[in-house]
Image (cartoon, rainbow, N blue to C red):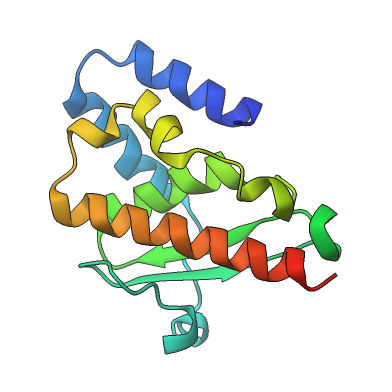
Length: 143
């Protein structure tokens, strides 16, 4: 399950000839994100398991399992900011109950990210996905 915006991102990646171009595109996506305010960069919003500093703040519209999932994130590393932006494209606008249905590994595999990230970055990416799933599940359960 993916949304149309993520399918467009896949098409963009297919258009880019090599990993260097894709890497630059991911970094540019991160640069275009609005940074989190420092007041939101607190232990409660920090993602554990990332080599870089990563923070994620949910922005849920509505209540219960049909609530719409959005989040904001930030990192002190450019490539990680870009990965947060990619995850935003993957999950933004889904219902909180649908977030758990996304096969993130398969979706990100469509971008070729699995083959080009260091093991530390891959572990951090998995930690971010798990945090997103947890935030959405908590909201879905609050109905």
